[in-house]
Image: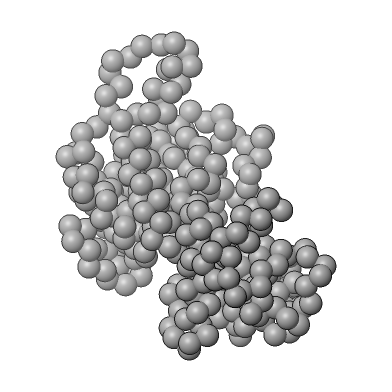
Length: 312
């Protein structure tokens, strides 16, 4: 069995190779630009932002695995062999990390961390920056997949009145479930901090726009750890400038890295994190990839299999 990897630089590949040697030593692992590997030998590919057309050049490729949770970076390839199964990377480690990030982001916005950091920079002092109590703050999570569900569970554990919005009704203890387009306005109306963990699909692209933001209560905040394409940045900035939106913590952007001249860097209402919310270790991801390949070889159902009908 031969696997090709496109995720990180040459140093990262050395780590990938070591991890696969531990979890699946029978797997022959090659780096994406390796000239020694024969295209016809490759059966499996683990990729992040693959070069357009490259996956189609492997005639015996059987399975494509994303190196991260999203697959939109793969679907952009116009020559993608769409008859092949495509698997998302969702490990227990990544799910936990995302829950931790969301809780930290919500607590940081609620307790005014961006304003406190700005105050530190000027050596200022303002004892009124106490933030809002948990009991008075309602959080809404858009997207209740593995990561969104775990984040919602952890928010409930902190004591937040937590709701979730998804395409279908979900049952999570302590979480109020809203489903479908008809329930979206009611979900937004009860949400003081909006968290986006949706997959990026044609129906979710630009979902955080002027119309969505207008339905949030005055003084609401936004956390986006889904994809940069979920946010219409001009609309978010306009909402912040008008005062209707109080603050935002953003971990993902289009493009990335966030350009040096982006107005996002200078906006006092936006706190930027550099796509760090849920980046699992290579060891954990290698274990997931190995178990996925083994399940595929046995003809078993695949965890995280992309569904073209749903778009994720």
